[in-house]
Image (tube, rainbow, N blue to C red; front, top):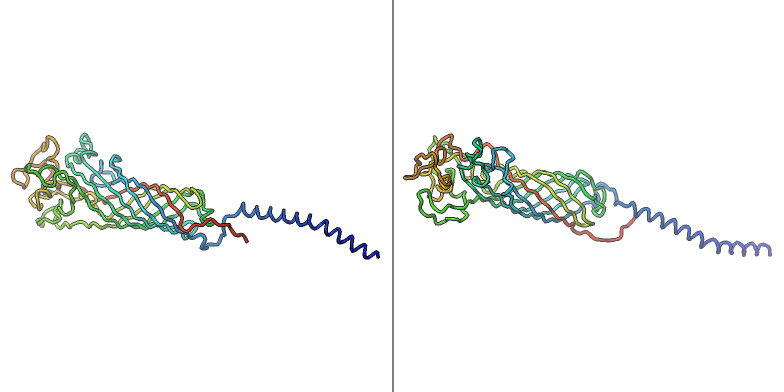
Length: 351
């Protein structure tokens, strides 16, 4: 009988204590899980699939040009008033905590003008450019691949990527270019040009004698037509900011160092005008006579009845049209909105 009472008492205590113990265990489990959720940053595996993701981006660009038609001969000299807009479409693959590769297509225009940029009161540099009176525009179509290095690494998934990070990049680009200029109303003899006011492709005209029969002793002897497809080295810095789980906003500034001096169709010396193929080519090669009051120091050209400014429009070693010692550069300032591909909102699993 005594044993029976002990069994009954034990069962009663078990019934009373178990709910309370179970509740305490549940509270501890919930608290523990909450701590895990608050501190979760993704798994830390070095090359896990969850950290390799792709994104696409759309950028708005501001483009500037540095070359022979810049206001001054300094390496980095540009006319901000000729900043032109462009746009880009990009695809980025992230393959490590700091490293990504970006492929991008960009369309942009660069532009320059001696009459608008050069200071005729600058007797050291500006007066030469003003009297030269050349101008151009060039529409650039570029494909680039660059490696991006983030300063702040992301050791977790795209969901827990860093709020912002500075970055640097370096790569290679191929681009197509086609310099153009607006044709004057008349040729050098004052006859109306059929192309007056139109944007004319400059490369086929051979404004520096590329298609001319030049004498072996001519300064530009052996000059060849420049290629319209060229290579450039893009490099720059920027910063990327996380907007939400799947969107980033970035801003960067980049230079394109090119291997051509003909983004502006200007590089070497003047040639004798009669060597050029047409009155249009002559008018686009030498434009000083379009300035009011010029030529101020007239000298006879090789075109009958046409005087040119002394030092311009004729073949001589000191009659420079441009400086072939430097390559042209263009600068691209970009603001880019990116969206991560294949991103899904799902409940995280914890182990």
